[in-house]
Image (cartoon, rainbow, N blue to C red; front, side):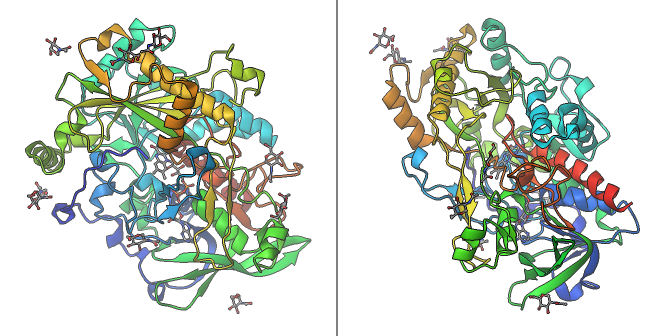
Length: 594
Ligand SMILES: Cc1cc2nc3c(=O)[nH]c(=O)nc-3n(C[C@H](O)[C@H](O)[C@H](O)COP(=O)(O)OP(=O)(O)OC[C@H]3O[C@@H](n4cnc5c(N)ncnc54)[C@H](O)[C@@H]3O)c2cc1C
Ligand SMILES: *[C@@H]1O[C@H](CO)[C@@H](O)[C@H](O)[C@H]1NC(C)=O
Ligand SMILES: *[C@@H]1O[C@H](CO)[C@@H](O)[C@H](O)[C@H]1NC(C)=O
Ligand SMILES: *[C@@H]1O[C@H](CO)[C@@H](O)[C@H](O)[C@H]1NC(C)=O
Ligand SMILES: *[C@@H]1O[C@H](CO)[C@@H](O)[C@H](O)[C@H]1NC(C)=O
Ligand SMILES: *[C@@H]1O[C@H](CO)[C@@H](O)[C@H](O)[C@H]1NC(C)=O
Ligand SMILES: *[C@@H]1O[C@H](CO)[C@@H](O)[C@H](O)[C@H]1NC(C)=O
Ligand SMILES: *[C@@H]1O[C@H](CO)[C@@H](O)[C@H](O)[C@H]1NC(C)=O
Ligand SMILES: *[C@@H]1O[C@H](CO)[C@@H](O)[C@H](O)[C@H]1NC(C)=O
Ligand SMILES: *[C@@H]1O[C@H](CO)[C@@H](O)[C@H](O)[C@H]1NC(C)=O
């Protein structure tokens, strides 16, 4: 993960107004719930789950229960101040504390894999980058599912339904920094350009003018055509992080009488199975609260799994849905043989470079507990302005390999099409915990061929699953990572850097291919864009977990609405796609029952 770690301890000082937890519909204890029978049970109050909860409870006759394992987001300062973006990325009470299986592509390293365990899910602890992906990504989903409603044109209205474009915190003139025609101001999830001017930002844009062929300026990477370098857009509004909990579960929604959210409720499996017309059905959702016996909640219309790309396949497998042979070997009774559950997962690895710079206006100038840090916090606290209104990233770039690259003699191009990138460059205004002053550029492999899996270690639902994204197990991905680093370095040769960049922290100029590979394998880390663990495919495909309507194949009344359903990772950070899936998924549920 990208670390600009600023440990922060005085959270009690935050005086947030009383938000959702003050209202009666968010419960800590099952004893306080009016009942355990609802039309819809949503498993997971994360990014997607709270969208679905909001949209379904627009229908007054629908009753909805959300079961969320984690805690409230209320007053969690690290999830509110954008600058504290990395403070939640550790093993803490807001995380599932997962560790990946040793990664052969990363020299066998064993890495933490952060997944949020709090209301709002990963939207409440991610890096806040807002990117949709390319038109080709979605047109490929349409092709894979045989359903053109998953195409870019089909999904675009759902991006707009989710997004609420707002002014950046510093209210700077944003003309020429984005294209208003591809944004919406009427959605629920605040999105904005960065609200603090780190000096590296304009220089990056200047470099696109100096090297226009290799690094063209892109006015708006969320237009469906992301290639090029442009300004970062983030899920930040009014100087604060936007999450599905702060937006879709804002007080006016949380107070709906037909919506109940139960915290500290960890779902173990689906129970009370039966078969109807040859299809599997579940009468109940079993969950645990700390120190209590298992409870069973009943859904009269649908069970909706929104437990995220790790939680969802885990619950499916503990419920007897997965590879029959593998489940039987663990002593789990197989109810539905769907061998694709947990298979074919894809994710983005990234590796970073940095340069010392001739400026003191970098992230390092805000070292924790420094005077500047305390002043910045006081400014944020009183006016929601200043350097704490954003994370450390300023710009992004999306690049394709040269079409003549020799690697294409060995591998077919895995990208979704000519509008889709192979490489992402992430530009940051400094480096974590470092002394001195830096600029950072990380390179991510965003068209991976590598695939991995999520499997069970045991039949105990409380055991964490085995998570193996298979990073850099394909030579193609390693090639992309090497070119990504070279492109990052090449970018810094633009004249604009002459009086700014002093020297690379690691000079890769004359690294041999082996040396570069070793550097990558020793330093690459997840950006955590996991998808595919319950992938959608066309109704007649021989593989896949859900059909294009997100219903589990071979089951009745069981839908999956979260990042798990994307069969291939898009060339983008995945929250915008997840929000759009959730908006569209909500419409699919409504269409089934209205
Ligand atoms: C560290 C990190 C950084 C990221 N940065 C970005 C970024 O900058 N931009 C971007 O676009 N994307 C980013 N992503 C990816 C993006 O956040 C995710 O793709 C998206 O949030 C996934 O949403 P989801 O609804 O599928 O799952 P989640 O948001 O993870 O929601 C799942 C919810 O279900 C709950 N749950 C799980 N299991 C159970 C259970 N058994 N019982 C009850 N509840 C359960 C979880 O606690 C969680 O609240 C990042 C992800 C991570 C982890
Ligand atoms: C994660 O680790 C923290 C700190 O050790 C701990 O308090 C928390 O309970 C752990 N969470 C889980 C789900 O195990
Ligand atoms: C549903 O399953 C739970 C857990 O297995 C069990 O305790 C309960 O009796 C079942 N209810 C019905 C109606 O079968
Ligand atoms: C199911 O799992 C078994 C055992 O792990 C494996 O051999 C088999 O290939 C898997 N089936 C499919 C279709 O993936
Ligand atoms: C993985 O996906 C491919 C298509 O990309 C498919 O052919 C294959 O059957 C899938 N494997 C599993 C186990 O689902
Ligand atoms: C700041 O540093 C001082 C001295 O090291 C320490 O006593 C104090 O607790 C720190 N304050 C914070 C908020 O970390
Ligand atoms: C933050 O603002 C609140 C009032 O809104 C105040 O009580 C608190 O002391 C402030 N904290 C800091 C560190 O300025
Ligand atoms: C650093 O920047 C200053 C202007 O801010 C310039 O005068 C100086 O030449 C620069 N130094 C280097 C080494 O580029
Ligand atoms: C990087 O290494 C190359 C080759 O070894 C060298 O020519 C160049 O001067 C180095 N760059 C810096 C800034 O040290
Ligand atoms: C670095 O590589 C360049 C071009 O490949 C070469 O001209 C130069 O001599 C090399 N420098 C060193 C120090 O190896």
